Length: 184
Image (cartoon, rainbow, N blue to C red; front, side, top):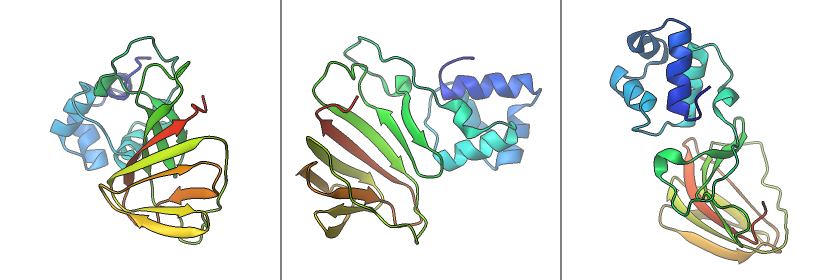
């Protein structure tokens, strides 16, 4: 199967004998958006991907794989691959083709809303982390203190401090994380 999400969707849609219009009707997404997605001209939110997966009768996890990272120094947005997914919680994208042997690991994280009853249990590890919020409101628990970070806010802290982050809103949160050392 092709590697990009758009190419995978196109292949699955064709195998099932569906037109773009039929998928649009099943998902509530526009035909134009689906066409751009299949041609890798746009990104997709997790909730929209889930709608497409239902329309194509596949598990959303089918679209995510972790291919080996290349040796290129430049990573185009359309080449970005999913590094990790926890269904219903988050998606991590590596922002480099060279995760090893680099000392730090930059990632883009899309964090879905948490169940309000879920707690943000702090944890710690070696190294340091830098986070920068792009979209939404990120809740950061750092050394027993809870902070709300908005777009443009950042935090830089030793990872040995008990910490965790979560999304206690009803919208997706997108942020950058740079970890040092690279946790591989």
